Length: 180
Image (cartoon, rainbow, N blue to C red; front, side, top):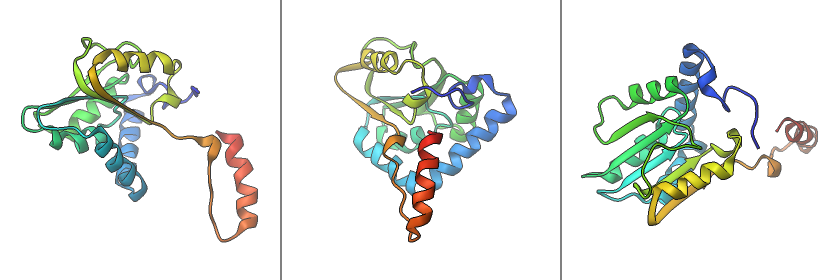
């Protein structure tokens, strides 16, 4: 499902807002729950030395930076995002890591050759794009035969809330469900 907000088209926001969005992503990546999810994604991608891995919708590049060390020596981690300001932030956060590359690109039209990557992932992206099938099609096109594709996104329809005050949960859950 696509939503009309800054996250579904971060290239339409100001540079200042994009910088704030990137900082939010960086802070969120440091939260224990997200660090656990990102570590699991890194492990599922299971990048190895010499491989090329692509993250579609990389945002600030936090997951790219987590995966990149496993690709050394000789490998490359590439992140793409539709927002030029988000890619600029990813480059700043990555500093001068020669194994990381960030490019501006649409997830629906990746600028890479067929079979160019050993693994391709998209984490937390599909709910923000208008045509998820086109994104998956592009991911399939750019991964090598026998390569790995990893997709991860949230399922807000099965939201679970636990709290000792069950009355509070009973009131909160319908509100959350109607907001998704």
